[in-house]
Each structure stands twice: as structure tokens, then as C-alpha cells.
Image 1: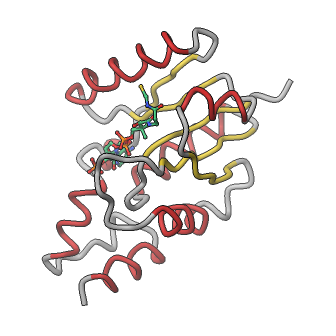
Image 2: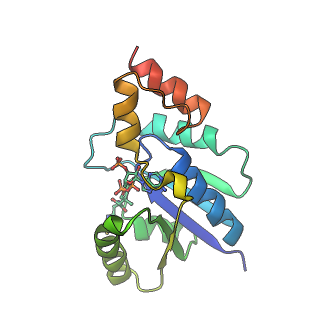
Length: 159
Ligand code: COA
């Protein structure tokens, strides 16, 4: 049986930290669906289509990774995709409380879907999309944190 996992997030935009998690996940699963959330309370800098397109471009070389958008409940989307696992990245202990809440609610909603946590490489533990956006807005060098196409998209926003 093919093992399918979903890796959900806002991806506003996708960073090297996210890609590192995807790389690790695709070593464990036959297919990993990067699930870009439309309904976000975060008021994203990139719209839904842009976030999907950037993630697809960044992950184009990884044959086991596929990018899709979703706007329903995550567990319903996972079920539609025949996925029985949700992947989340854990960067530091401070992530745990929020992740525990998400995973617990998802388990309550759908007991058959398991959440597993992967740690990104140490060099990405301090990365987040908003910190990268902030550095880009202040004309700092973000080339070490994001794929060239995200670099172009982000610097283009702050010209
Ligand atoms: N590398 C870099 N950054 C990382 C990272 C990693 N490995 N792991 C997490 N992050 C960052 C993200 O960039 C993001 O940073 P930001 O806040 O600066 O934008 C932050 O950590 C966490 O965001 P993200 O991983 O995008 O998750 P989220 O909290 O925005 O998304 C959803 C949460 C989309 C998964 C959740 O809201 C959801 O499932 N929504 C669907 C509706 C639903 O089912 N709701 C009920 C769920 S209980």
C-alpha cells in the first residue's frame, strides 16, 4: 500500500526550512502532499495562488512531493487525498504547545489520522516565513533562506 502524508501550512512563502522538512518526509513516505492553506487568519503577503505556485516551483525536482491548495478542514482534505498521516515541523520547544493543540484537535476530529513531527536541520531552527519577509522588507539579504524564485518574488514586492 502506498503511504501518503500531507504537510500543511500557510507557506507565506515557502523557505529552506519547509523544504528541508519535505525532503525528510519524502524519504519516509511514497508521496507527500504539501497542503497550502487558503483560509488563514494570518493575512498573508502572498495570495493563495502565489503561495501554491512558489511552493510548486521550489519543490519541482522532488518527484514524491506534490503541492495542492485546500480550504476545508485539514483532516477532511487528508481523507480526500487518502493520506493517513499529517506531518508538522518542530523547530524548538516553543513550537510544541501550539502543535500539541493542533494535533490533539485533529486526532479528536479524525482518530485514524496520525500526526508526526519532524525536526528541520539545525541551521533552520530559527527560520520562519514572517522573519524572512521582515528581513526582505528592510532590504536584508535573504538569499541563504529561500529558493531563488522565492527570492525574486519577495525582493520584487519590496522594490
Ligand atoms: N521552516 C521554516 N519555518 C517553519 C517551519 C520550518 N520547518 N515550520 C514552521 N515554520 C514557520 C512557518 O513559516 C510559520 O511562520 P510564520 O508564522 O512566520 O508565518 C510558522 O512556523 C507556523 O506556520 P505554518 O507551519 O504555516 O502553520 P500555520 O500555523 O500557519 O498553519 C494550519 C496552520 C494551516 C496547518 C492550520 O491552521 C490548519 O490546519 N488549517 C486548516 C483548517 C483546520 O483544519 N483547522 C483545524 C486544525 S486543528
